Image (cartoon, rainbow, N blue to C red):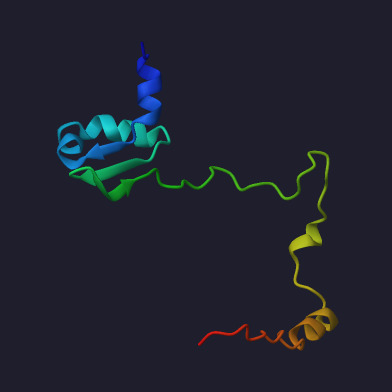
Length: 99
């Protein structure tokens, strides 16, 4: 016998008539992170998926919790470095065939 949780996890295709009848139920699933595929006569036509949200706080710079970053880290590069990197020629792409 299946439990409701297992059925909930794998049933993500929904016909449009069912989605209309139970929209709030499916929106709750989307808010929980699930993507719902809408079907017309069992043929997929659209997806409802959660929107990406911006984090409440900016992500800290660096991956080490004990790492410190100097205040000058985000300052513009010195002029001599900007000049040398600005004058580099772009790499040429090789033609690999085809039209």
